[in-house]
Image (cartoon, rainbow, N blue to C red; front, side, top):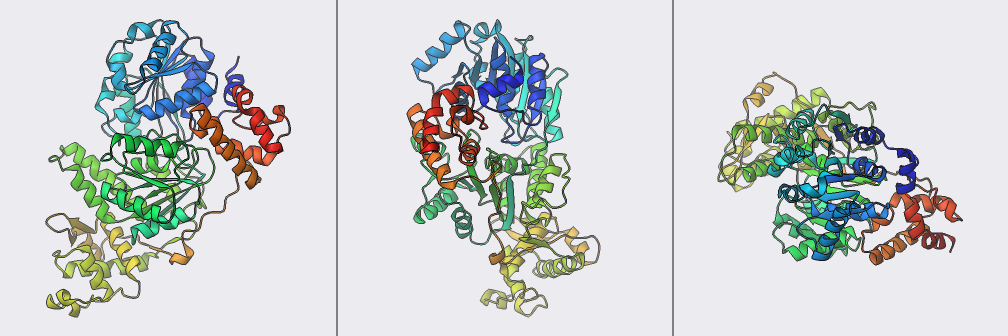
Length: 597
């Protein structure tokens, strides 16, 4: 059986996505490889398909138990003999996994790095192991965004199986991180298959944060009954936002490391199984979540890096259908990231340098009036051919850049306020000075009589706050942490006021012109919406009976195609994308009956 035939039979797809075939061919040829594909790009197929074709064993190292269990379920639905070994397994399931290994039946085995490093699996693996796939491989790199020390020891285990090809996979890795992955995992003359990081189905928006809960609710209200993730910076923020969303009648749950384990598990399973629409979480949530039909991801606070943002926002639209990613930015978030990073002591110089580079990168992404798709692509070393993506706030006209002359004049006005207050006051005070809002403190300090008092009052508070954030990101202003955060002009800011250098500023459009969901046609064509909802309900029922998440039965994209094509026979249903032989046999009659009813 050829790779293309296996793809059709097991997964119901007629053709490969970009670089999947090359990755499969490298594995089948016994060659090491580095696979960088965006979230939703089909990385798991790169090692699952060789497992389906070979009469040997593929070992997958994954850092997340929830992800392992879901991928095992999905592999079994595709007709593979798959198991996982981890600490949360019940004894009977663990016993079955060992039994399958001993009998030489296992095609695909998932383990955590910690479990693999125990060292007791070597004899069971040695005779049949043909490929070791390391998922979330960015975890091996000090330069990455999710460094895990145990990943550094994987090479010593892989060296015990020199006959097995090595495959490292991740969704996000800069060129520096790519080199580090190859070195730390001991990849031998690997074939580097680097996909384009752009996700054309995602609509990116980045706006200044004004009223956090109100802005989050504005996004949630655009997606009634759809799955969404809201990320916040602290546990307190998570609880407050989750409570506010619940009060609006939306099914929602909080998720953070401070909650009891059973509550976290209940929230995660509720979301994956579509009993809960919205999860509000710290970054403790999401890396192991494979729900394919997340229709929006909101960052209520600024993440720590562009890598974090790409990974977290990438959880939207994994099925290829349109989805929305919104970031609400405030420069104070960057200062808090610095403070949190140094809570346990001063950072080593190289880590501090890396943190500052990461914070500058995400700050530039959030405030620059430049196509968001282009900024993300360039960060990961790729160009974007289109000059207008039509799928971000800048290209949709929701954020506009000031002309060079306007930006220079506006920046000088804002910087002058920080200069005149001598760096002894916070951002809010400087904003009020520029808006001409005098209180007793400002009058007492004599600042209400300064020439800069009210110099930007016509612009409005939202624009002024946004400009100050943009000047901080461009290093013309700085926020100095202490007993109270103070806003100070930098030497670069002084130089700009004296005509040296250039600045780029953008301004958000009025609220009435912003935030509209981009009208997008489904890739499956015009679908019968009522039928699609009936198929979703059926999928949920069948998934609950089978004890698997709904997306394991069929992705939304498959249901949309069914609702568009309305197949009248099992043979016609089998032609729909994502309907493999096993799924057709198992679920075909039920879905056909729903379509024909």
